[in-house]
Length: 461
Image (tube, rainbow, N blue to C red; front, side, top):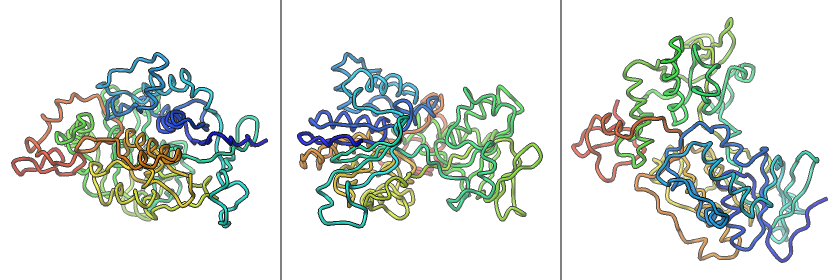
């Protein structure tokens, strides 16, 4: 039976019980409305648990939502040191789990509940007259079967972790990729921990040029120190490896700058075999191993490996939103007003300004995509930006348009991007730079940052 639609209090359905989803629920509750959080996984923070070993680039101060913090403090919670850098596991155990179990949110979260479709009650996508006055129908499946929730508004904060991009350079799975799935991992496996036995002593290729690929490659080199038979190959589609080295000392996040500096040193020392201009087209078995090829599969180049890590980013799952009227950028798959701010073809992560309900609104009134999913296929996202998104969205749902329009978030000048950080001393950033101190306005995500004396900074090869 469908849940009864609350008449005296707005019901807001929130898809996803990650940091942004639970922050949205906290803001909804503070506004006197009723949140219902639907989480596909068995526990809150299900996606983060998949990368629990990874350190954030940003310290705790950038990873705690204000409304969530107020709920936690009221329940006797003690904040972790704000200048420490948490792992994904710490985010879950020290923040999300207390938020979900020790605050009034505990009665508003439904785990193991996968949303399968969202629509307007009694209206298919084609029908317009009176549409905006009807509640949403949120169809879900759990261990009891299929259920329906009625809601006045919906915030989709389901993320993108479980929709990774494939290895194929054209956005499609490489030929043979699906058949070789047992030897392929997407994202950032715990090569020094839980997955150590899978990679130690093996030839491992990592495809990608972002922070996840770089972090995995660094960890594989460290694994090689313990298991010398391990061979590390970096496959990147572009022809300029130095683009992955980042901004070094000009990055206001020391951990992110250190990542690029450490990686550049490993490449320079020949500890990582680099295969640039490698656009994967075919993957297939060869004896007991796997051949990964670029070209038409019969010529050009290929590498013979035991394992492949695909770290080529993620894309949003839009399948369950088929009956919702959406407007998305054709390339980034983000809301059109947000897309130009985050398109990696146009910007560095330092140029993304705070944004909220105005940029994230959809043609379907009362429906919003927030968090990492709002960035579509764009690669960089700050958790604190997600918190500002839902603060603004919830204010608009509550009818407080002044608060919805107000920007309440101030970011560091070079921007902040969440992601993996290796255990590299912050001092390594300055020591590894090849151009000297950076100017005040350097971009934290620049490839070859210009330093004060006109030379290239830590982005140089």
